[in-house]
Amino acid sequence: MFDTVIVATDGSQSVERAVEVALDLAARFDAEVHALSVVDAGEVDSSPEQLRSELRTALETHAEGALSGVCELAGPGITTAVREGRPAAEICAYGREVGADLLVTGTRGRHGENRLLLGSVAERVVRTAPVPVLTVRQLPTDADGDSTGEVGQQAPA
Image 1: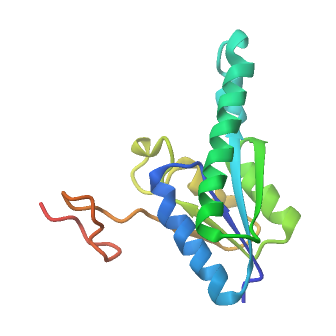
Image 2 (image 1 turned 180 degrees about the horizontal axis):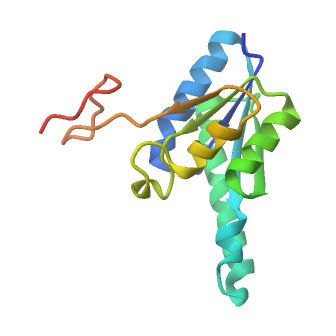
């Protein structure tokens, strides 16, 4: 059913579960896995000109670190890529380039507090992707940091 699965990551904790789900699906379907991290060109372009080079380098380093984390979970055989541009557009473009059957993304990234349900990047990917998109939300955690174990359940008050 799925031959090529792409998981988009920004290295945030909220994406960890999406990575796990993507890797599980890929294993079940014996699919090729691509991990993608996008350096947000808007973030770079909106910074002061004298800081842009340093910011770009820092964001690229962060993206490489995010991909390393995926590689640690996935093991050998995963393809990784860092792109620069508008994240949703780059995710969709990469999906077309590699002939993806499924895009997997978390619902909230580094700026997740600004959105209630879907992060702005996830929302745009869902609306514009050329293939099915699986959005995976982070499970709520209890006071000890353990997940409640069920999707949709609220953590105890």
